[in-house]
View 1: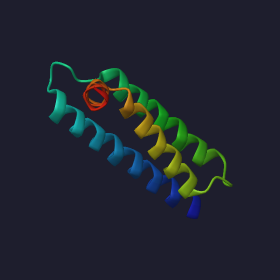
View 2 (view 1 turned 60 degrees about the vertical axis):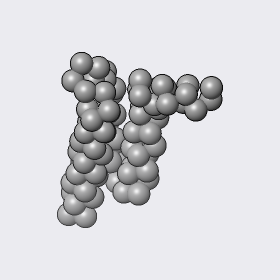
View 3 (view 1 turned 180 degrees about the vertical axis):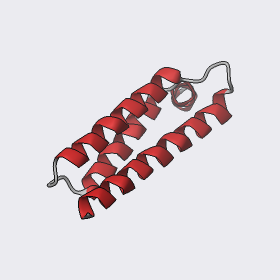
View 4 (view 1 turned 90 degrees about the vertical axis):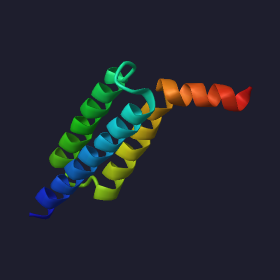
Length: 91
């Protein structure tokens, strides 16, 4: 029962993190330059982490949440608005 609840909590975290990424990207870029590839990478990565959590009982919930949070930051770093912001910050 504990494993199922932790998997559901992880899936909810993945869903809310992906939704917040979509909202942030849509509010910055608009509809014409939305990064659908990055969104797909987040969805696939979330599914993989949730399936690993379900398969391996020794994987802690905090480890799974932390790894997906870091993965989300990594994916967000390679979107156009962040790259443009880094360019203007450096120059």
